[in-house]
Length: 339
Image (cartoon, rainbow, N blue to C red; front, side):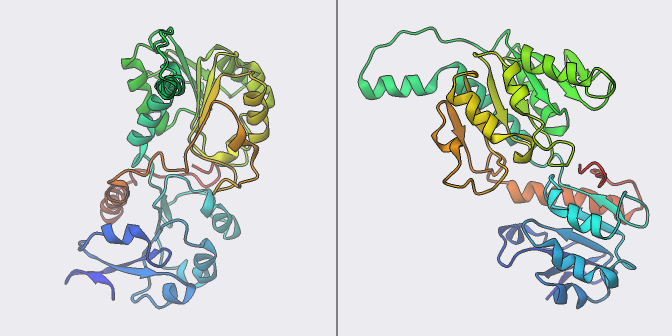
């Protein structure tokens, strides 16, 4: 049965998989709205009154929403993705020719909910590399007193491939360590959190991309998964990196050419990498990445901390409040860009 208040006037359909853990953190009461948990097309069509809003929680199949859309499109004025990544919704948006967020259908996502934990992951990966954690562990296992040089992050350069919310949350932490910050972004406007802003727009885009990979001691890819970002970090990119440089991937796995990364690691052309996201998840056992030296692999859980679902609901609630009062949404996304 739906959760609702006595004054509920709008229905919101929540499309999710059965037993999804996000439901345990779902708000008990929402002013002026009734919440209807749905798993199938039939569930969506049975919501009464017809839903004004839809919340999509991955990895629910957007095909269920797509099948119901001919009857829902006249009533739904807000669609929210629980996750920041909206690549899973792209086929639905494309099929129904939804090309922009508008008053007739406002679009928002979970951008920013998990940026702090992702920022900590970046710092952890950089410290793991710079302080030579694996060497320390090997020395302990071998009972070996090895007084090696232990570098610091101060004075190193970190280059962000994509400078959205995750990168902007990470940059101040890097600044606290005394690092120099490069930002590669679509806009040619300088960002105050970066020492150097490099734009992909215009004729110097390719040159700026090469410069970031060449100058950075740490390259951090936070790109979303879109057609434009597919294999953005490729063989040419890794060839620009120095043998002492370290690569970190935590946006979407499709932005990285994994074969090129594996070759760069196995051939010692870069010092190491940390990857939390992959083209295919779970990462197949046959992937060459499993056998790469100096590679940290995590299971797309860099953002999966104790309050993960609470944070996601908070972002949803903020957008809900804006939607109910007719204000611009807090975290809108552009379906043509994919973020």
